[in-house]
Each structure stands twice: as structure tokens, then as C-alpha cells.
Image (cartoon, rainbow over all chains, first blue to last red; front, side, top):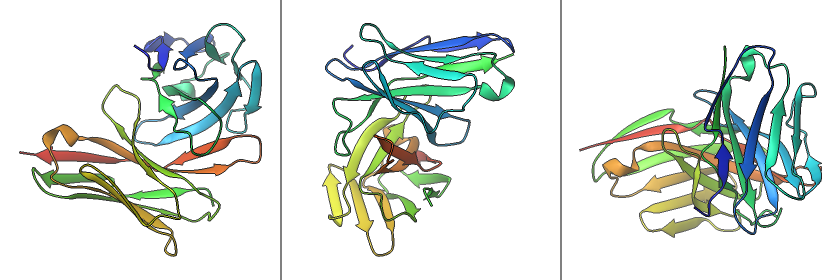
Length: 115
Length: 115
């Protein structure tokens, strides 16, 4: 499967625990975007990364959320001390370049449930 | 100012009919307008996209109509089929000023095509 791979597909955490969501972009893509989708809502931009760099994190909550895209390995979205309101589907997208005419290709998401 | 308003929220169309979904935006800085199709449990898949210098784009049974002066664009699905039943999202992209092109999504339209 040459598409964007996200894991786990489903993640259950108790309040106060940490959630780590992983995203492997399409082959040849070096630009990764993370979005959050609440039920019955559209996707909301969170953060944009290139390899080893966070380019735009304007959509990410200032506390408890962090993202990285190391030189080797997948991009990671990390949520510390999760709360009920963090329950959502988190989608990762990748593109070959960070330009406007480059379509973003999405993975199938991680559904995060907080007990 | 960065909102994209999508309507209707849900749509039921007879097989063979035309499905029409509308979106409106305020920010004239948006310069790329993709439509995504999402099936339950899956990530959004790019369907078709248009730039504001074009009034119409057609790919197979899918057509985007774009009205720059009205700041509106719409998706038409001709000869709708039960397999088209999904949630459709319009989106708009602009340069965030922080190094990325952010997609702003509408809230989605749940399309049901009945036999």
C-alpha cells in the first residue's frame, strides 16, 4: 500500500494518559499535515511539518499537544494528559511539496476515544 | 473570515439524478478549491479541484462550477449512483503566512443515493 499509513486505527486512553499517533507519508512525500475531525464536523488544520521541521503549528492547542517528523521514521502527534474533549478522529495528510497546487493525500485516520 | 459554508447538510437523490452541493466563502485570498469524498471509517479522498481563474472543471461525472464574483462554488454529480453515497467536503486553501497552505473545510454533506 503506497498510501498514507496511520496507526493505530483506534486508540483508547483514560483521562490523564498520553496518546501517540503515528503517520507514515506516501513514498516520496516530505510534507505532512495533521487535522482533527470532530463528529459531524469538517477537518480542522492543526500542524504542518517537513522533515525535522515544524513549519506551521498555528492550529494546534498551545498546551499538551506536540508534533514531530524526524529524519527517519513516521511523523508523531503526541497528546499529553488527555481529556474527554480530545476524543476525535485525527487525520494525517502528505504532499510532495508544500505548495498550493499540490493535493494533500489523506490516511484513514486514528479514532481516539478518551474514557 | 476563513470559514467555508457548505450546504445542504444532507442530501437524498434518486439513482440517475443530479446531486448538487454548494459552498460559499468570504476570504478572497483563497486560491485553490478541492472537493473531498469520505466513506465511513476512511480518510477523505481528493475528488476534483479548481482554481479561481476557471469557471468550470469536469472530470467524468463530477463537475465543479465556480463563481468568483459571488464567492461560491458547487459540486455536481451527474447520473448519481448508490456507490456515490458518502460524505462530501468542500475546502479552500490559502497561504497561512506561517509557511504553509492551509486547507479550510466545510462541515460536509452526507449524500445518500437511493435505488
